[in-house]
Length: 133
Image (tube, rainbow, N blue to C red; front, side, top):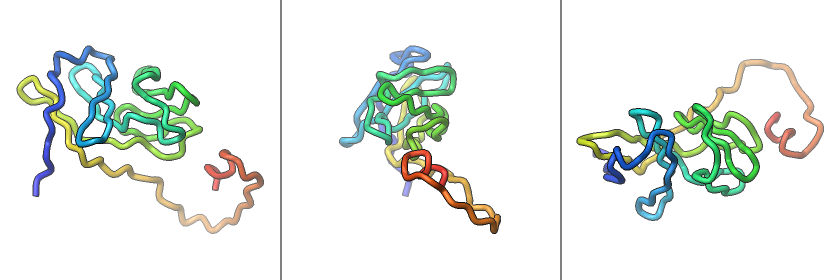
């Protein structure tokens, strides 16, 4: 069964470098235009719910306006804390001048555990200790 694509905007209505939110079936999605490509990501920071459309875009990086968590615009991956979880990343394409978005988010690949048999002790129960563990 093919995933349903939603026609969400005219491509030309999104200015290069622009970030805008849309809603599809009750889910808020951030559209980011990168020259001739549009990326569709989760619109809120997974750390504390900051509205990413009010954040800053610097190259491939999206910076949350609240606590400065940084994400990859192309993949949704976390680039800098305090966020630990990536942004949802939706398939988006341009056809006949329209932006089409698939609601189902693509899975983010996580780092696989290594075969390292060493044992470590993490001292501290704050955010840095949680991320280190």
